[in-house]
Image (cartoon, rainbow, N blue to C red; front, side, top):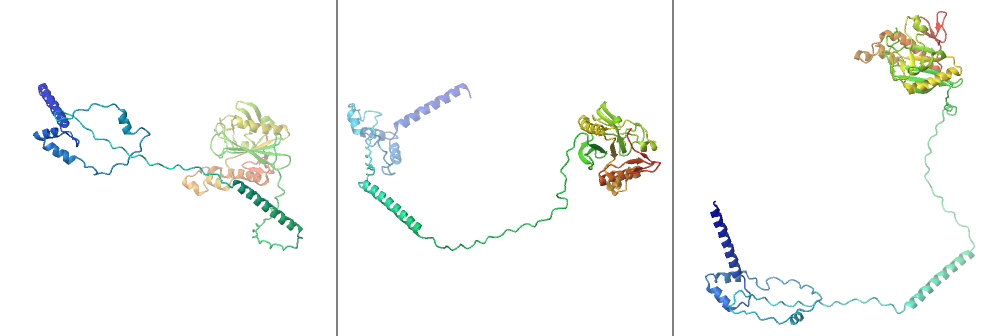
Length: 405
């Protein structure tokens, strides 16, 4: 579309809008009192007959809808008084020759609201003083009656009264009492151990535990504490030769000469490898310690914190008169099931669960003898090296007692 065509279209729209506005203003609905000249003029035009017909059809008849309820008037002066107060306005011409004159219907005055009666406050009874006097008289009479009844009750002698029937209560079932065990009152209080008590040490390689046992006087040894082993080297089985990085197994003894308070690994004591049994069987090596830190080349590393307490008890016991501290080193807790499992005598060995230590079966069963003696008696047995086995309690002339240096 060219600019000229656009301008012509806008002009046409403007003319149409003006024409529509003119028609709307010209043919607005007239009031009932419209002048006869204007009505005749409109009817004489080409559209005068159509517009009045439409107005008549669209005019709403009065009374077609019920009037809205009258609103409650505000407290202002009435409409008549307000109109009288206004100045007289000049009368507008309403002749037929006047174009655009508009007349408005006269507003009907709204009805006045009905008057409502305001309730009065309750009046004070005239006999209020009589009511107060009557209440006081009633209270005095009641008090006098109670006093008379109490006096009559006190004057009447008390006769024998019948006892009320006893109330039957369900008796709870008493629990059956069991006799106390024979040794229930013979148990000793737990001992409090201290530095200088006798010491016994057990080590279990597979479980990674060091047990510290203490004894006060002539009583049995009691387990004081179990310490975790931070590091031990090698596999299950005894140490055989030097530099095999294997931790030993067997029965050993520690004397005061085997203590190392200034060890490179904080504190340490030599377990006494090789003992008499190791030497009889040609085993070599040495310097197997229980020490601090967490490094091991055949030793048992307990960390600095762990060895501090262990070493303190061992040293105190030797200073207090204990000649030697026995140290028993086992591959594991010596039960028949564990030995069978590790030596291939159990069905678990056929499914690849542990096993592979058949060569140590006889040696471990010999260690189990000393293990069982302590479990039964609570006393570490005296061990003797008798060639290819340990003997316990006593040995013949060919046996040599396991002792510290």
